[in-house]
Image (cartoon, rainbow, N blue to C red):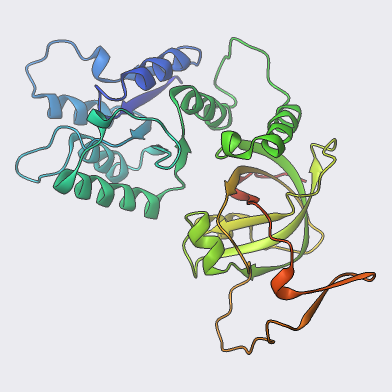
Length: 321
């Protein structure tokens, strides 16, 4: 049976996103619901939106920097009320949130003051309840939505192009990431990994640098098995936060898994990746550390990296070997 998809977002600032998402969905065996298709009705705009959510199977929420129209009595935005209707009715929910650090947005499309506070509260609720995907551009949004629909509707969709070799695509993205990490930061890739060792709590420096929740994030050392043509082993740590820890558990040394992970880059100085939850005593700054058996230098003269790259787990691939 053909499923129905409802697209929820503000309109003026996200018109290009909506247009591209609508065009993408026309390649799938789904019915599409959204404000572009409502036409003239006797119901109010909000009543129309909520009624369309009711008859939909899948809710797609696209959230940027605008709160949008508000319902007078509750003070909540139409977008939030549409989401709450979908959540209450146990719809399949996909949330895509703009990358606040890297996306380019016109100033007129950014809310301020009280409206911004309301929007941030709504975003916080979505992050608590769902694994939220971020996007940097309309094209990036469509790329991620297409991948998610291939998984969600695997046996019910007809796509007008050949399936991509995701490991080959991941290889191209990672190789470019090694050259221009800031440009590629936020891209998602499919990987086959081997877990090496046990999980450990991530330090506050790591969490602050990559916008993760301190005390709810762990790191694990990994080896990338696929793609198998990467000459660098620089991506040897994977960070998991919140629900993603449960998705990957149990985390077992030597186990092989297939996952999707987000490439991340920061120029922040990170001295320690493992968290300490009890008092420890540091050695004096003049004590020595071993770089290799032939070279010993003082800690305060150790070479500092220019930045850090890593992987953030987005979700695991079920039934992977």
